[in-house]
Image (cartoon, rainbow over all chains, first blue to last red; front, side, top):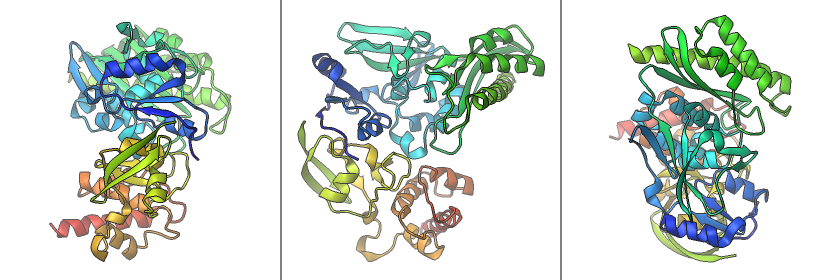
Length: 291
Length: 159
């Protein structure tokens, strides 16, 4: 299958890229890893008239801690996270996630920024970044601004970026020593989207959960947090009864659709189960981090 | 629509061609360069039959535009038996019966080559993870895993 025709630009600087996007308006798309956009173009689900390829803007390819957060540049590939000792050690939730995005070949090119900007609730990083309370840095013709992740996803495949804006960086707060995280994805096979997925980042004092954020993958039209489940667990010991109650609240709150991966009822129920498992794993890691 | 002149290194040789912006790298490889060892399987970024190395990374060439390979270094399956002698991976697939229909084999071998460059002594689990972006419908994968293990041993002996 061959995509529709388009004009291709490969700017060497961010300013040049923003100028191109501003000039072409809604007919232009940013091309980063391309692992969602190019398949969509082959199917002609996407037919942009102009592509602005940012792969030549090499200063956007970084993953580093600075100023109290982990900064992930727009061109950081999933593989870079998977191979990072820093991520493996300090960001277990992010490490879990990077390892299960699509397959190892796709991860060589796919970017974390693209995974978020695509705003597909079936993608894995939206849930993870919701759990981390990450921030997204956007640059456009009017300068730079920061968008909280809770305000970033505005609908199915829709995000809060304004026309002409590019997602340039993702900021993940550096987790405290008493925190732990985990991402568990239920998938039929490698490379498939999640049947359900749960991202958890929590802080614990012994058995008591003192803070928690939970993101869900592919069980709603827009990437979502399991807010009721979070509220149910904060200040509570992480007992089986409390976990079960939280899992049931998430199962009720989510809004999956029946498809080839299972019925809506099935997805709600496995969301309940996977949420419990993810909280247990995150808690174990929080305890491990203290010793 | 834009057309672009691109120059890149393909299996060690400098190549310059003009392409449409929308030309996928796999079509450029098969139809412009007539290197038909790289296969098109699924056309949906699922199967890995089109795997090649671009600037040292194994990628699905159906999911990159040819124009993006400008100034790059491309390696396809044809580079492996340079001089007519089989690469240890090709030898492994022969010796261990790592293929039946052979359609997935070029992609499997390119993925395996990248894996062995990163992990010269992979465990079975690492091999299975390393080729998990490549689909084989014939072998059940066991013989492919054995073939890659064979190549890993052979490459170790050569050191």
